[in-house]
Image 1 (cartoon, rainbow, N blue to C red):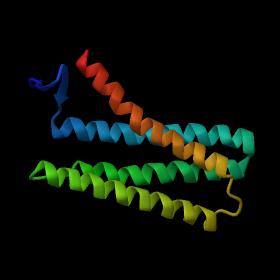
Image 2 (image 1 turned 90 degrees about the vertical axis):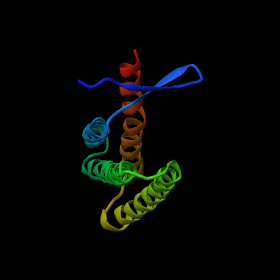
Image 3 (image 1 turned 90 degrees about the horizontal axis):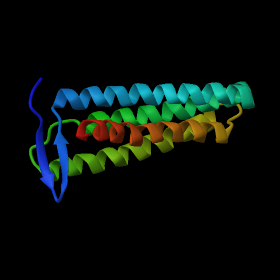
Length: 142
């Protein structure tokens, strides 16, 4: 195991992880997003039937695919902090465009879209992408 480098900012230490740690976390978050989407899809199957299920799967796939691009775009090395920030902003822009595009595709491809199911599954993937890294950071700083 390698020693952890810690930056001190104000009074809160911010642990810095290696690239392999970040990639492992990114893979874990994507798997957790897919699992959360599947759980929501199964609940939607019980509540709204097969149209709810397929709509929830479409919402979960939208969240995972958009986050997949953003995650691996943000993890590419950058030469300067400005370049890293620019890459992050561009990745977010593409993530929003991909999300809108996949929602439009769901509207045209699925015979009956259950929008509540689609949106709940999509939101479940967002909650995972926000909360999983925070939990890991809390665990590592304690």
